[in-house]
Length: 388
Image (tube, rainbow, N blue to C red; front, side, top):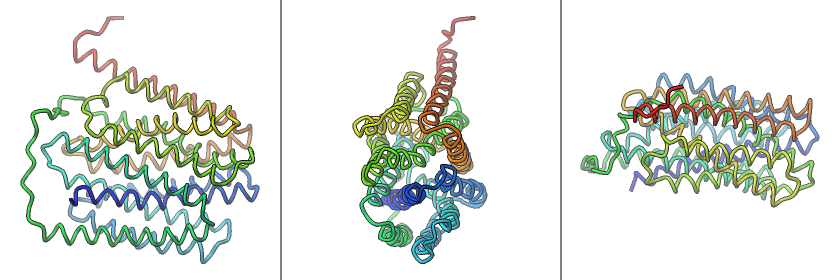
């Protein structure tokens, strides 16, 4: 039961983050601020998040992960109050930087925490953890912009306070129950389990994919509110379009729960990249709600792919997973900086259409590289590569 219950926590924390990313960008957009100030909100979070992730990666382990998450929850509750008590528009930069600290001291520890609930010998447990985690945090990211699009921003931050406290108290409860529970019978590997030790260590490929993917998703998350304002769309549609990106990640995460080998197939990389390319081109050219919602569906399918493989390639390593997970989060932070700042400058110098088109080009290049690597390694394993 606890193995399922723990995935409520990524929903809670990512509701908080999704709401913060959306409403800070929207408030600056509504105030008519330059694009670099709009995208700078996510850049500030990403800078602090990446640095904090490298720190937490040095101290986290299975024994202390729960305690670190509990402290992060209480800290995020206080920061959420700061947004309301000191509401100056530009002070958002201070509060979102502190959100970066709190979220870093949650993300890597939680992934270590969730892996501790799985049998160390069961390959199916790794896929289950990756699928549940992808679906759970994506559900939170979807809910945050949607709810903040409906509520006034102060009420939204009060809900963040409540959810952050629920996170801290929930993990505390799980730790108490786990300490008193009867030890579970060790889960034995099933005959259908895949021996992932036979596959290459693709953590580095996940980092490259997440570098491109997080750069482009930062552009989408920070400039989609600006696009909505420019097109005269209501705030609820601006939030719903962003929410749909994450909803697609939820759908794909659950669909992949019982999957086995597609993470290593070049055909999956091709389809994921194609969806990302098409989605970003629709963001660049779409001027109607149906086209923007279609863009969100396509791009969300791509982001589901690169996020799933990022986590899977790190978790599947039997020894280095905690180290790899910390690098995952640092890469996400650094790429978030690149996307937010680079996207903001490019949008300010050109326009949103050019910015989304450049993002599409990055996805195309990154996907072609991944397809090549996966195809090369696949055919070498089968000894059927065609000599040049």
